[in-house]
Amino acid sequence: MATLELRSVRKSYGATEVIHDVNLTAADGEFLVFVGPSGCGKSTLLRMICGLEDISSGDITIDGKRVNDVSAAQRGLAMVFQSYALYPHMTVYGNLSFGLENVGTPRAEIDARVREAAQMLRLEPYLERRPAALSGGQRQRVAIGRAIVREPRIFLFDEPLSNLDAELRVDMRGEIRRLHARLGTNMIYVTHDQVEAMTMADKIVVLREGRVEQIGHPLDLYNAPANLFVAGFIGSPRMNFLQGKVVGSEGNTRVEVEKLGTFETHTKVGALKTGDKVTLGVRPEHVAMERNDRGFTLAASRTEQLGHVTAIYFADPAFSVQLPGQVDIAQGSPVSLHVSPDAWHVFDAMGRSVSRSKAT
Ligand SMILES: Nc1ncnc2c1ncn2[C@@H]1O[C@H](COP(=O)(O)OP(=O)(O)OP(=O)(O)O)[C@@H](O)[C@H]1O
Ligand SMILES: [Mg+2]
Image 1 (tube, rainbow, N blue to C red):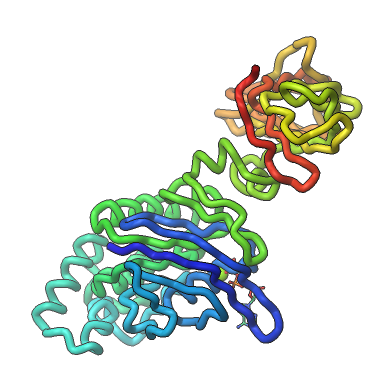
Image 2: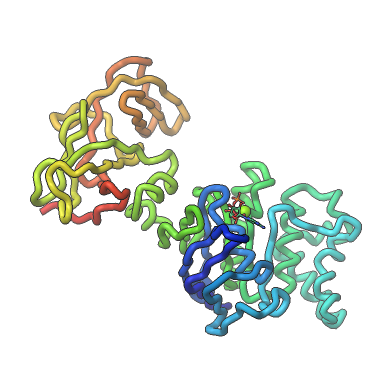
């Protein structure tokens, strides 16, 4: 177990800065997930923590000790890659034991650690096989096993499940969480999949273009996204956004949206003034189909029946709703919708969330 801290960490390749002033802390035993679109710097951050990549400025500390100049081998961390990076000519046993043999661990201890990891990951039947004779999921478990036998202070995972099919990914998600519960060791897990982030993390770090957009517990990010980017990135299906302007300058924010009407929110006007441009956000699952004098009506352009939910899409303006159960709506037919004031998110012209508060 360990605490990890990044303070004002920056990284440049040549003249191009790709990581800009990142600050974050992982508490003892915490499961941290870095999530963000392709190219936002997730792997670079992980590689800098691991010591595979230098940092251009700032500090990385593990248990309070600065490790900027400590080599990867001396940091006591273990990384699991998407590509597994197994040795094809070695058996599973050989792949698991190789790293320990290299640092001169006594044979009996190697054997004990390999067998314990194999038991934990249900790899015992395959110890004498080569990687080519394993399934993708089994190979990934060997790659994780190789990290476990090293008894690292922190596990680092870089998109370890992206080569697996959907069902196996769900299984492996559970398996890695169970491993975390059993070992109690910090894990830092990189993914671009927000569902993986939501389901696995104690704490999510949302990254965009080398900057931290928000850090928080999964449900805090879902309930109170700090800005438009996080609001659009976290949550599936994606949040709807409508452009509008503030009407009235007191109490709760009321927003007029062209063609749809004026909506009451539970957000305090605060620094906003009449006429300010804002974006209203609402999640598709928070829209009700009901006729209401403060509601609005749109023509359905497409529906998707998933069995347990029905998704309805509208084109003008772009909007979607997700209703529980099976709802039969013909294409082009009008649908009356209602959003309760507390379901609206309000973002200012800079895209920042206007802090939410209860109605007065
Ligand atoms: N060795 C390098 N030289 C120059 N630029 C690099 C180098 N490695 C990464 N970059 C750049 O740094 C940025 C961050 O890359 P990184 O691989 O960390 O992104 P990522 O979030 O892991 O993306 P993905 O989800 O696609 O894996 C990208 O713009 C990338 O082009
Ligand atoms: Mg990457």
